[in-house]
Image 1 (cartoon, one colour):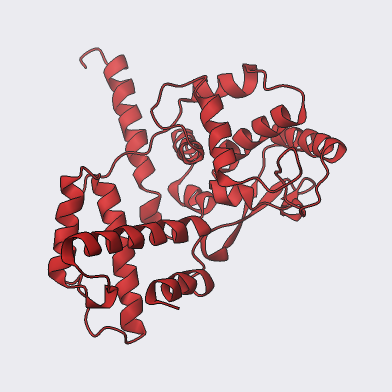
Image 2: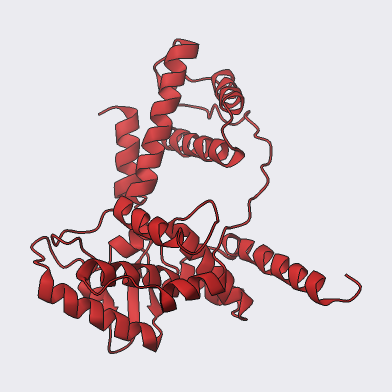
Amino acid sequence: MGYKESFLQYLKAEKRYSPHTIRSYSNDLNQFLSFLNENCHNDDLVEVTSHDLRSWVVYLFENKYSSASIHRKISCLRVFYRYLRKEQVVKSDPLEKVVLPRGRKRLPVFVEENALSKLLDEFEFGADFAGIRDRTIIEMLYVTGMRRAELTGLRDQDIDLIEETVRVTGKRNKQRIIPLVKPFIKRLEEYVKVRNETVNRSAGDWFFVTGKGNKLYDKHVYNIVKRYLSMVTTIEKKSPHVLRHTFATHMLNKGADLNSIKEFLGHANLSATQIYTHNSFEMLKKIYKQAHPRA
């Protein structure tokens, strides 16, 4: 097993990184290796120098990669070389002398409340299994703020319709309990009833399934969300993560405190949640300009 493969196994077995993160790290390492082969005539990650890494950063900037993408790719390499040092494969970290320009943090994109209400309250999704499931998926993401991988990982035992809660397994297998609102309980009961009557779930006890009874895959959920959000909003990005941003932004605008939102989202620390305060401040500024006679 090579260093790259053992590193990815380490992320999976010891660090408990999500499959999505592991795929991203694998892709970033493969891209870096291709760059080394083509530009540095080197295919050995252990022999990489600070000069190689600075050249890599320049290459990414010249090829119009966003600041966020570049920071993510370098973050992957930082974790990788930290692992190699831990395993005593390398003596020093070649990234120590690599400094990245500080990128401007983009505000989370979210759907306006009236647009999402229109989708959930007025739009006809259909009375068949697919229609009921798709609407339930969109509302689950919005009501709970869970991640796409957390949604596809839900099992029947995670949904407690009596206690009106859902147990979510997040990053590094950390679990949290999220309350469910009463109107949504009826939606879940309807979904379970139709699912059990029409779908043969031979692939296990996954809560959300395809028409053939298999576990939903990430791309399927992404396509569902993108399709329906396209009907009510013109925002460029229409993904499950946008519904997570929407949940947090709407909660904050309605007066929820930041610590509560942090717990709902499963963030490890408050700094990750604080970015949503910028959205609320932007909304306050907008209201002020519209309402104040001297604005």
